[in-house]
Image (cartoon, rainbow, N blue to C red; front, side, top):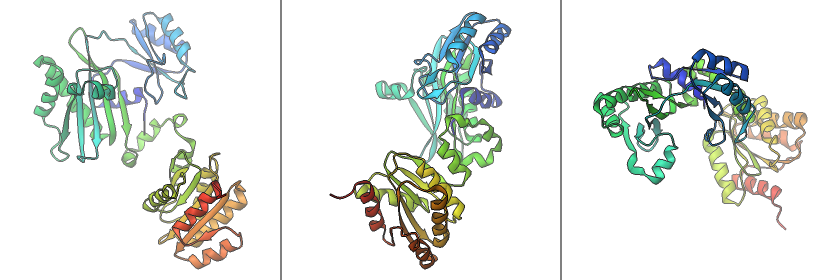
Length: 379
């Protein structure tokens, strides 16, 4: 789950990371009022879940309160990579002597959290990695022992030769790592970590991606979700306890079990088709879940056929069949549905589907070929 910069900074603040003073507003008058209270230049920053805000004009320096009003007026309502700016962060402007990068990610290869630092901050770390990889230092942290002080200082010295500044940076790196672990994040970064004219370090920008699998431990994080920035189909899928990912094909897939869903998509590709989605209805499916799944799939205008591939273990095939019947009555699908049902109560399911005259089989290969034929008929 992505969260906004101002929300990430709130989490940083709880762990003692140095962040500039700032407030979130949604109208120009409030932006000016904040600037008046701060009595110093401010930055107006669009709050959207995409990068490149500065290049798009979504970040502006404002020397005076009236400048803040005009900047807010220009940025609010702006379309940045398909997202409309509805909130802005009004934050103190900072004099910058140096910009660095500090971030933490989950590295699935090493199965460890990896800290990355670079003296080249203020630009995308991917650009640094591509053009000047020698400017990046990485450290894989032992998940049991955690980050040692000497390791944090080693990372800090890579950025700052001055030992006094490096010691401050080491403390920031440790706090960032602690916030990452305790928040169950998948990514956490400060870009840039700024050294100001007083040699103080400030987390000028903040980014955190929270691991959806850890959200059950942080019920308060649900309030951080920006529904306007999320796919409505994925929101509906979560609400109905479905796993859904939109893809670019035209064969809608409704499957029980993540492994079978992946195998189904592989088979579609193998026979020359393109899956439109990954959708797992889970191990125990009520007719209501099948209706919800089919509603989400049919909302995609590119879908030309819906493929059900159900292996009945815990899932009862007749439950799914009844769900298909109810969905057909309620949704009146515009496309053909092809079905493979095998396993628990398979015979009952076939009796139910025979009444609908739906193409059905107990072979995975066959049902995939049937689906592909519907969207690309053989001449």
